[in-house]
Length: 148
Image (cartoon, rainbow, N blue to C red; front, side):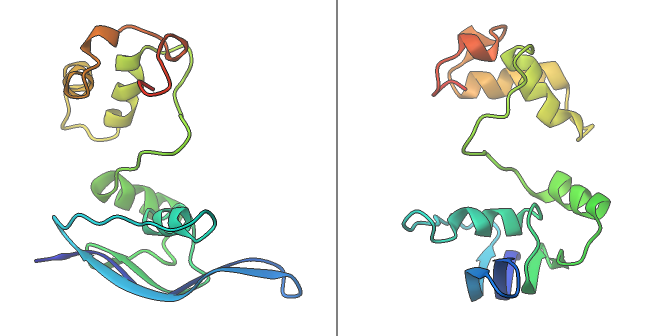
């Protein structure tokens, strides 16, 4: 199998030299492609930080983070965007829906960067897969928390 995500001696620190919070300390792991992994732990244990590092939305203080064998620590923002576009999908804890767009329009936005999609058709297919075909043209304010 191919290694999809690899962390080697990754640390993440916030703050100043005199007041530093070490969120992650020298963690190492790898996840193979097609492997299903859960990250579990108590609040504040670094679960979200790991996801943010793996997606390039946060930068490691030290160590190596590779996505499909490509080192992402030190990449420029446009390069990170390209890595995310090709390799990463994230469902955030909080909703990032645009209030004046329908469900189909919001889903289409996430597909827009990848031009191999037929935006509206594929957005409708995704919503249908999640049992939301009856909500295609509803605004976020008209959807329940779970539907959002």
